[in-house]
Structures are given as structure tokens and as C-alpha cells.
Image 1 (cartoon, helix red, strand yellow):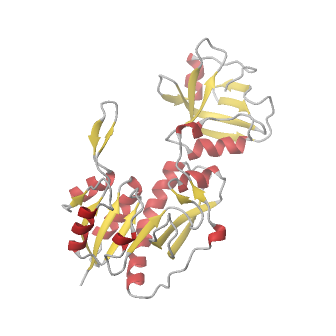
Image 2 (spheres, rainbow, N blue to C red; image 1 turned 60 degrees about the vertical axis):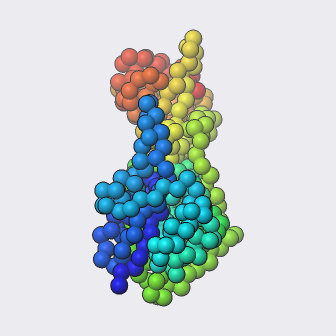
Image 3 (cartoon, rainbow, N blue to C red; image 1 turned 90 degrees about the vertical axis):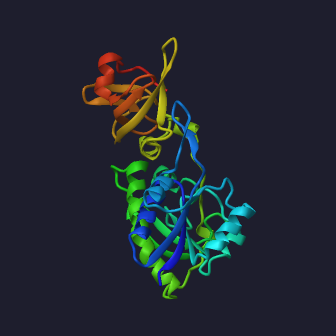
Length: 315
């Protein structure tokens, strides 16, 4: 008899995992729980979550409680008699009363090698902190924030060409591939859950818009990681100073030039090869950017319309 599963997820990271469950004859997905539709875009129209779109397209029932711990929803969930809750990027901490309903409790797909980077932004913080690798952990859900016992983990390298989008997409696929065998081994008793080592835990707080601000006194590698980690949101940014009204400059793609030197924020080179800006150590070679009010473009395209001379300061 297929395992009866209720899936809980909201963000794009969860979609591959939901599809993996739907594509397996080992499971009966009873429905999907996701966050309520939220206003987005310039017109602030209500938009469904990525998980809702997948679930609705598959003909699944969809529940969107404002708070998953609401007694009315818990009663409805209990009536489904699920064997297991599978959670990925849902966005709320689940109460113990919910985890006690299925006979196998709940498991979560988390985009880090727990206990490192518990919390809301593990992908961004792994890049920001210059980690060589990250990965996916599937864990039993406990009442705390990403504190449950580990069922399985798999690591992947963080590549120099990665940003938070490309790494996110790879981890979403990895999580989906790891999920199905982990569920089968966990529910059959093959896996012995392993407690996390609290001494090795770290917290990946939510990213804010201000995290994107570049401090040119920092080393070039630090700023390079910030550009990669915060693309596409909130985007790494600086300012074009010296104008009557300084304009915001977002940086989307850059490389490091370790051997260039100059005062932090000084333009060292501005030509068809790009824009090179001195940092506290080394320099950042900017290849793709966007001036406030304009479109994303190469540095050469921007310089054609907004010349910057070597010796100019930005920031």
C-alpha cells in the first residue's frame, strides 16, 4: 500500500521534491499545504506560491492556512490520516501537535549540511561565508528551528561560477533525488536517525536589502562572494558618488583581480573589458551591472553612456 503523504511547501526550492513524490508509485500524495497567496509585482495582484501552481496542475487538494497551527486546520489534517508529513521551504515552524498526527511524524528537506546554516537563508550564507561546499540534509522535524535528527545528507561543491540562483537550482534537484530513497529507508527502519551536534550549529538569518550594500574597504573576495550570494535579491549595490544626485548601481557579475591595488572604491580601469574597482585587498572586475532606472547591461555598455575615468571613486 502506498505511503500516505501530505506535502508542505511554498518556495521554488520545494517544487522538485513535490514532483518527485508525485512521480513515485510508492506514495499517495493526499494534498499540498502552502502559504496563502501574496500580493506581488507593481500592481500587487495576489499570486499563488510555486508549490500551489504545481499542486493545482496535478489536481491535488491545496490548503492555505494563514497559520498551520490553527485548530481548524489541525483537525482537517488529522482527518486525512497521513502516514508522513514532507516539508520543504514551507515558511513556518510546525507545532508538536501537528508532528504527532502522522505515524512517522514529519521530515524536512533543508538546503545545507546541518547543523551548519539552520534558518531561512542557508544558500546565501554558505556563499557569503566562502564555503567550499554545501548540500542538502533530510531530517526529522523537531519543535525547534532545523534541530531534528539527521536522516540523510549529501554534499555538493560551490563552484566559482555559482550564484544563489544556480546553487539553489542544483540543491532543489539534489533534495528531490535524495528524498524518495530517504523516505523509503526511514519508514522501513533501515535508517537510524542521528542527532545533530549542537556545538557545530550555526544560524543563517534572513537576508535583508541592506545586506546588499558593498563596502569597498573589504577584500575583493568578500565582495565577490556578496555579489554571488545576493543575486538576484536583493542584489549587491553601490553608488556613483560625486554627482548632484548619486545613483544606485547594482552589480550582477564580477571576478577578482588579486594583484590590482588602489584606494578602496577607486576606479582603476573602465573600458570595453569592464570596470575594475579597488577593494581593501585586490580589486573587483565588474562585468554586468545595472544603473538605477536602467536595464541590466554589460559594464562596457554602461560606460558607453556613462563614462567613468580611472581615479574616480564609487561607493
